[in-house]
Image 1 (tube, rainbow, N blue to C red):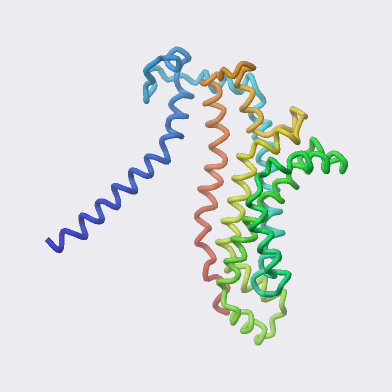
Image 2 (image 1 turned 180 degrees about the vertical axis):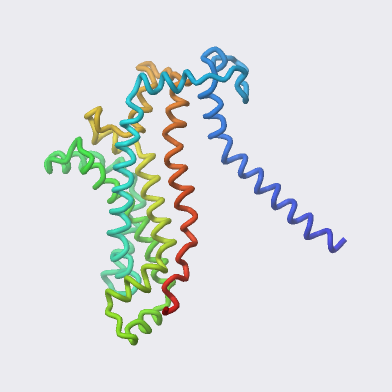
Length: 279
């Protein structure tokens, strides 16, 4: 009886994990199912989980009606640059916040936390006015600046925790070996920060990829619009959505971020101990 208890507990854990995975994957599966259905099957009162007649007409209609490819390129550019800038600016700031404890650093930490409390809809009008006066309205550069400012507080808080967890003795050992401060940061601290950098970059990238409100207010040129703005065009003026093309376009818009996440998540654990041992 005692031997069977761990086996039962393990089985229950795997069942719970499997149920959770099904729960997470079901929206994506339903999106795929809807994208492959005919308009008649989508309009049925009793929806089917698996399409009876598979069709790719919704994908053709989505690409014919809206500039999906161009919107994906715009979104990829804005999201990638935003993620890189967010990480690049957050690393030195997080290091200072973690290593140099003072009244100023504590005030910055408090401000970072408070900045997450206020809803971003409150700053839409000031942002619009600032970007318009700076000549950055209706431009990718203005949108990138907004996304960087939006993502930096969380990235700062995350990277600060990573820096604080790295023993300061490693930097002291590097200094005793003759390494300068910059060399120690590049050769010792940076490899140990790799998981945090990847996590912060993923957060900034996915947040920018899925963002809608700022893009709606700050981008007007159709050639500059991101994929979230393009998806809205499949909804008519009366709020009636063309579910087939919308599901197909949404699926296409979801795949790049999933690929990026799958590619980067393997590097979350890489470099955790890299640089800690002197070669």
